[in-house]
Picture 1: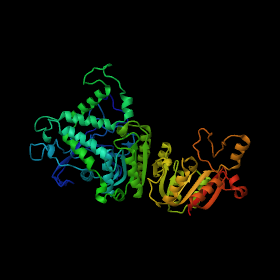
Picture 2: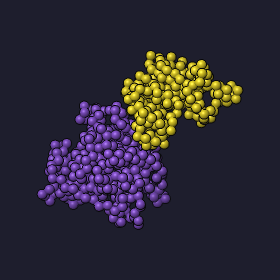
Picture 3: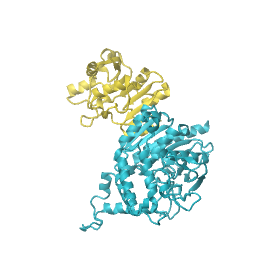
Length: 386
Length: 201
């Protein structure tokens, strides 16, 4: 827990829940008649409402992107490294909006919510949501908050996919699109990892075909395995070697099948603590949203054609050791943006931290990110004076 | 701040409103000048992180890439009005391949490089007996990025071989002042930096 809160933190924050009554037709054909979105905001919306930024979260992220909910919190929000006074997403300049996606488990309507008018959990009956559905719901949130246009929409990984979708579906509603450690679609290898994670969850005897909450239980083992697998893919060989090497937990081999090496202990800890804070059905939904994402689908499988819809300026960032969302994917995206004649800058950061690098304040990354955000900010002040 | 004379010359050659690709764009000085003065749009390619940040700072589109990996992956054929490459050709692993790719993505290219035939370079090798170290070639042989130095004659021979037509050629001296009568008469001897406007034959 923080004894004192750092000066470059947004400090103590409190989320708001926004209820929406207007039915939302989803890509899967089903309709959510009503739903909640839980939202945090940081900074102040300026007089002409031109300084708003939308943050889109990744698979296990949520609306709590920065600051602390109380002085008892062990950790700040997931993107504390980039959001705060004087940081790249500078809350002295910007009004930052961060919501939990539909299907999430942190306060927005999802599998752990009760079906309206009943006492039953949605559980596995919560409809499959897509990146496009999320963007539609975020656009409604934008209207609710009275924001006419985002100065930028920013996200990493699955969050970056939402940014891309925003730029294609609502080109007139954002000035800048910042896509970090993402891809225009998943590769077969990436889908394969998601499938193993899903199988781990669904084959847990406590899964009960998704109705585990109704059975007062949780597929703990499955979620733990899914997270352990995911975690390996978010790190790099080098970063694991550096962090753990072959260090033994008890200084000796135990000649058994329990934990010998530190890396095993670490993975088990990560897996177990994830079980407590995440819902299995949400995990399944999020991985499906990742797998399904392919904005070129609506444009004759032509990504360039899809991106021609966009009018935002783009910043694309990747990390050299990220093999889950490899730099090649970001290069392909940047190539398509160039072919679509869009303004784009592409930066490949040398980093050994793997996919997780996008959450880490690597100096070169922060320098490029800050430089870009300064341009975004100067665009705002330009508009303000006009 | 006044523009380096070779960049000023390039700026004169480029038509307003053009779409430009600057290979090895550094901190984006040329692209910024062209954008502000000639309403030019386009992209720079750069590999140095600090320069990339400076480009972003100047609101220049910059793509982080290694020119040794070529540019074919990134850019469609005939997608630019000009490709500009200022003093980068000599640091490329396969200059002949890159030149080929350059004239694939654009019909016109402007290339500048330090002229190895410049009299000081010749003097340092012939009389001093060592690799030249000058203002335009500031590194020693062991730490120089300039692995493919050539003279005007060498470059023009290569153009001939690759089916490249030279539209214009200028040379400037170390202060990048526009040439004297000496540089006009003996460019390969008195021109320190060579500037070529080339196209496909």
